[in-house]
Image (cartoon, rainbow, N blue to C red; front, side):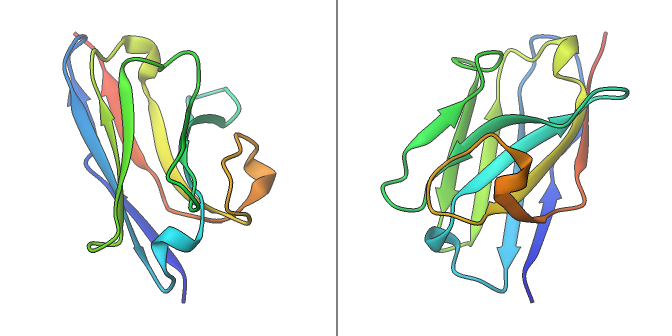
Length: 124
């Protein structure tokens, strides 16, 4: 069955870096768009980044552009989100999700499988 498992979250200081991983199983990774979303307490889940299945094109929310990088290792069936220059406002639970289509979207309704999430806390 389809499974997505996030890992790599933790507590870091502002300005530090962190890489979160999304290990996929039960499907061929590069057939689907994979998105990263985050949800802070009291806020709606928002799209952070995405990598498409067709040509590997990527999407980034304006709030993380230039700081976060998404990548995919098909051999390991894993998608990564490298997060640099972290800010306190990046604090959230980070989720990866499999898209229902091959192209990127920042709408949660376009994703039908979700991981359990990994907590990222940026605080001094």
